[in-house]
Length: 222
Image (cartoon, rainbow, N blue to C red; front, side):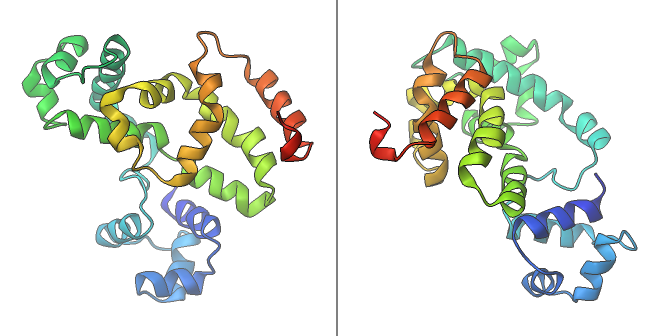
């Protein structure tokens, strides 16, 4: 997806006109229009301004090829971090331990992450990457939150079920977890029993059950 398309997707997800987006980042609406039509591109400084303004992933404007090159080493480290967390319930994995699992030198890991706190925050970002924008775009198109949760949010959460289960259950992450947005906490609580099962029910069965539940008044759910 090229830069202009990403800007247009972001604008629609935020329910902004070109004029409103332009005012928010202090440029003209004509310039926003040119970006979206791929007649010009924002400067690197402007892209960072947009990322900061709307709290986007740092790789929001990168093409997939660039992302793959830049994040291959990080992915290896983050996968090793996940494996280390799965193996350790009550003790936070150290940089040394993650490096060992990743078959890397600790100095190599330190090039990307100075400490385990940075690893945890990046792990959160990796789990959450692009989900927010995708769900917001669905809200703009459909407006039906229950349908979006069943058809869009549930598959995304199902795909991330191992990571979410680790984040939800490890005590050394609770402080960070409780600082997340209220919506994420509610959604996680909503599916916590499902995620905690050794063999979670298939996604289709979960979706059907949620459709059945949400088809009745909430006081009849129990």
